[in-house]
Length: 380
Image (cartoon, rainbow, N blue to C red; front, side, top):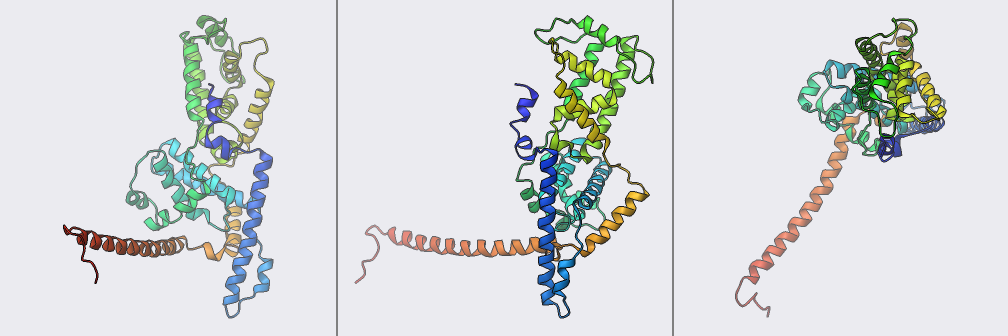
């Protein structure tokens, strides 16, 4: 069973894999539904106010899909920055970003502001990725944030995630490919069964690779090869930590395709050599695979910057001001909503407990009466 076969059994493949077209259609649908609910909520609120103008709610200028994506992307960057500040490992940071992006496939920033959801997504990722930090210590690192602010949106988040918390990242595949190439460079790599190449012949082929865009001399020794492989590995790793997270790459491509694309973006000749060792038959590397990797590279190149410039900040400020006027007023206070839901749940639980306690007392009374050797008193 190959890595791709294993991936196809995961919830990430079954529930969170899309084409670019289906992803775009889903976001349009979510935006349209949220805009309609915002207008309905504003109409309900306006009808209870003395000077509320219900007719004007139909003219509310809601966010577009593109504006929503820019805002969500900005808070994904903020999640990454906060994860780095807390010194969380890469898998925690990457999982938190994917939780946010998955959440906003079925929800809109007009309903739930990303500023409210971001801390909850990051805290949830520390739990699902087995990186323990207490809620008290987590909140202490966030200014003007309480424990309730972090916990209140958690059930909403897990619902939107469809209670599937596993995220398959491409970093593990990259590390495996890196180790294989290092073994080839030293002549210690064992070719796969059926391959006619030997460890030494693979090493010699690797030594003959063309230099990377004439930026470094031709490799002449295993030490030169090691340096080149390490440089490509470092660049690919950085791409997976930034561009892969901030684009839709996780929704469209498999982890194997992602790390190979990042590696090919760093050193195309080295990546193609690696692929040729895996497809040693007369057909060579499938053209369909190469075209898929090139498409993925193009998507990674479109990634927004992890450090927004002045123009981007100005645009985000405009979007946030626009959002202030088109937020759903019934969904703003997530802490209050969470408390109300808990109160309702406790009321129902208490009623159930009272009924159970009454039945238990009746049963105990009956059992005490039955303890008599001759049984309970016969009524006259």
